[in-house]
Every structure is written in structure tokens, then in C-alpha cells.
Image (cartoon, rainbow, N blue to C red; front, side, top):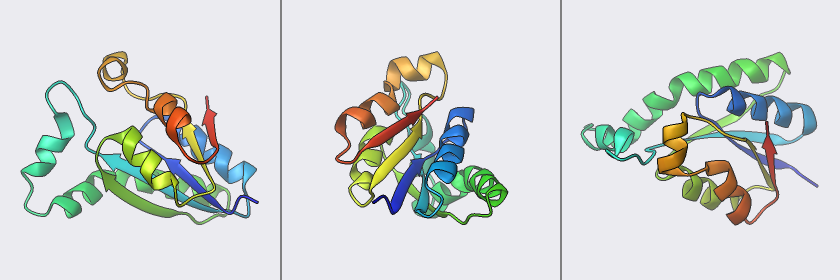
Length: 139
């Protein structure tokens, strides 16, 4: 039985579709939305900005606020409540590690620009291949 669902989210349409799918397919499950801050890029991107913040964790949570607001709005459409959590690190590795505490992962098939996918790799593919639990990729 699937009781705990992990839905990694960024600000993409595909991530929103993944959350909607999870809410429809697993109506009685506990759903946790995870946002990973600190994607890798050629110039180290977001993680460098966080490193310069006085309170690293608070800064990461602030960067996730808009995504969590959107996630809560989507959940409200289904009369559902969700949990939210933010993590810092490489997206695919972090999602795989966090997935150990869940029954399944539901995530969007892709996000970001083509350049991001070339440098970062396809997060969905990495999670699909490495997660210790079943993974549903929504497109």
C-alpha cells in the first residue's frame, strides 16, 4: 500500500502536473512536496548565492516559498493538505536520498532550459534509475 508520496517540485509546469497526478492517484496518501535548492551549473548558480547568506537554511526556505505557495494552492483544489520540505544540494542525489523514507516518488518529466539539462543532466532520469522506491514520471 502506498501511504507516503514524495513529489519533488521546482517552478515548472511539469512539476505542477506531477503534484496534480499524485493528488488524483493517491487521494488517501500523505504527500510531501520537496524543493531542492542549490542546483549545479557552470557558474555554481544558486548555491553560491546561498553560501553568502547569513542564515543558509532560512535563505533556502525563502527561495522555496513561491513553489510551496503554488503547491498548497494546487492541493486546495483537491481539498487536500500537503507537507513541504526544503533541502539543499544536487537535485537528483538529494531526491534519491530523501526517497528512502517514502513509498514512491512522483515527479515531472523535465524542467528548466535545454542548457540546464545539458549541464545538470536529466533529474527525472537520474531519480528513476537510482531511487530505492517506485518512481512515476509525469509528462
